[in-house]
Length: 287
Length: 287
Image 1 (cartoon, helix red, strand yellow):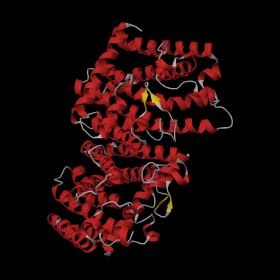
Image 2 (cartoon, rainbow over the protein chains, first blue to last red):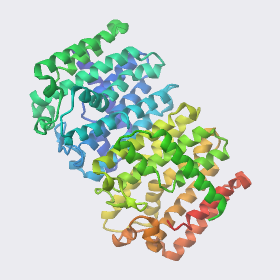
Image 3 (spheres, one colour):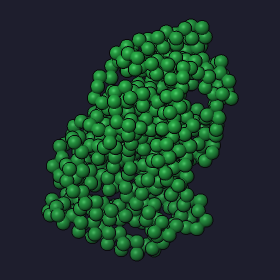
Image 4 (cartoon, each protein chain N blue to C red):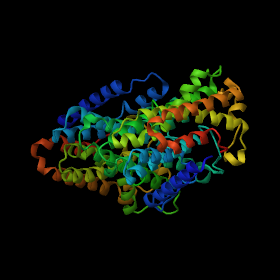
C-alpha cells in the first residue's frame, strides 16, 4: 500500500470521525448507536468522496457533508444486513454488531435514522446548486433498484436451487456494492457540475475489483484481521467470483480491473495518483 | 364527516395510488411489498400535502411527488414498527403485515427502500427551487430527532418502571406522529416559497388531536373497523392521553385542539374549508 493513499485514507477517517462528533452529538442511546455504527469503519467510500471533491475543487464543507452521508448509508446497510433475519452476524470490525451491543429494535431504528441523516446532510445549503442531483443519485444507488435490490438478490441466492452464474453474480454485486462506490467516486464531479464520466469508468472497474477481492479475502483472509466471520459463503454453498472463476483467475481478473480503473483516470494526470494507489490497495488489503 | 373533505380524501387516495402504479412498476417481490405497504392506507398525510399545495398554487406533479413521498415514509415506519422486534403486529388495515405476508428480511428491506424512494421523489427537478428545503425538513422530521426518536421513546416507555407524565407523552407523540403531520401540512407553502406559519399552527394542534383520538379509538374502537389489534397499550399498562386525562377530558381536549387548528386557518378564509373538515374528521373517525 503506497503511502500517498495510506496517508489520505487516514486523513479521511480522521476528518469524517470529526464530523460525526460535531454533527451527531445527541446524548441518547440512538445517537450513540449511530456513532458506533460509523466510527471504526475503513471509510473507503468517504475517502473516495473527499478525493473526488479535491480533484474537482469542491468546497470543504460540501465535500465533508457528502463523505459523512455515504458513510451513514454504508453503516445503515451493514447494521440492517447484520440483523438475525438477514445475515445474522454477531461481529463487525471485531466488535459486537449493533443488535448484539443493544438490541434488534435499536438496530432497526439506528439504521433507519442513519439513512435519514444522510439525506439531511446532502440537503445542506452549503452543498451548492448541484445538491439535488447528488441526492437523487444517492436515493437511486442505495434504493430499490440499487443497493437494496442487490441485498434482495443476495438473499434469494441463498435459497436458490442452482448457484448463480457469473453474469448474475456480477449484476448482484454491481447493485449491492458497486452503486454506492460509483456514487462516492463521482460525487466531487457532480457537486462541481463537471463531467463525471472518467470517474464513473474508474468506479465501475474498482467496484467489481473490490468485490472479487472480498471473495478472495473470504477464502484466504484471517478472521481476526478482517474482524468478521469468514468462509460463510463457502459453507452455505453460495456461488462467488472465486467459486466460479477459481482463485488464480479471480486474482488475475481483479488485477486486470485495477489496470482498467487506473487507465480511466488519464484525464486527471498526476493528480490521480492517490486514486490509482487506492485501486491497488483494494485488491491487496487484508481486512 | 363533511362531504367536501370526504371527496377530497377519496380523490387524494386515488391520485396517490395512481402515482404508486406509475412510479413503482418493478415486477420483483421487493416492489410488490413496497406497493402493498402504501396502497390501502388512509393517506391522510398525502391528502394534507395535496390540500396545502392547492392552497399555495403548487404545480400538480410537484404536489404529487411530495404526497407520494410522505406516504412512502409513513408506510416504511409502519412496516418497521410492525416487526417482531418492535411492536410485533400481525395485522395492519385488516391485512397481514409485510413480515407476515413475506418475511422479516423483506419487511426490513421494503421499509429501507420506501425511505430511499421518498427522497428520490423529492429530488425530482419538477419540484422546483424549494425542493432542498422540503428534503431537509423531511429528513429532520422523520429522523433521529423526529419520528425515529419518538419510536425510541415509545419503546423505552414500555419497559419504564413509572408511567410517562402528560408532558412526556406529549413530547413522544409530537415526535412520533406530529413531525410528519406538520411536514405534510406545510409542504405546499414550502414548495411555493410562502410563509408556512399558519399551516404549522394548524398542524401542531391537528397532530396532537390526532394522537388523542388514536388513544380514544384504542379504548372505544372496533378492531374489525380499525383493522389492527386494539387495547394493547391498556394491557401493557402504558400511559396514554386517555389513561392520564380520563376519557371525557381527553375528548374535550381533542375538540378544543380542533377549534384551535381551525382558528389558525383564518388567513386562508373560505379556501380552508376542506382542512377544517379534515380536523373535525380526525377526532370523529372510527378507523
